[in-house]
Length: 194
Ligand SMILES: [Zn+2]
Image 1 (cartoon, rainbow, N blue to C red):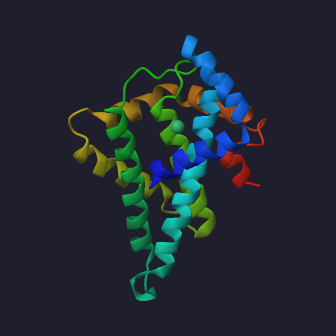
Image 2: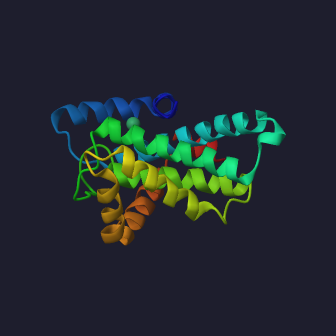
Image 3: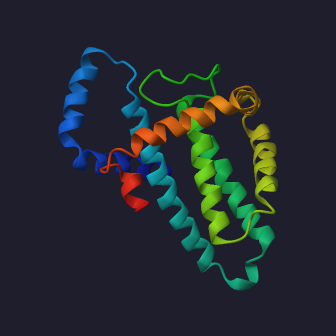
């Protein structure tokens, strides 16, 4: 679901910026170099995708009969979805690779993307229902579950180590990408947030 929405985000970007993308692709064919706009497009598509994923989950939650609704049930529901997002990235990339990189390659580092995605996801649920008290609990439980699933490539340990060592750099770089993104009105996630 998330991947589908992410690619849809790229298609929407494409329709708004056809010329630029054609030029970019041509330039890329010659040198597949870092371009911060590529990173901004990935971040933007991620934001677009997580917003739509959230709407869908909200729909399912609201359809749940009220006697089955409790803060514990919502916490469990949230936890499973954060776990699923993490596993999705892990499967796509073959596990977290360290060290982190910033101004390199055509996609931002997965750890940076996941942090941004989960951040948006938790914010959306915070606004939807008061989960502030359980936000930490959800993340702690998420990592407990993940540790048992992603044993082989030690992705959880690597992920936590990256946060510990690069917390400030990650935040600064994410801000930088979002600043670039904000200059392009055709970005899909950007259009959605208006
Ligand atoms: Zn992408």
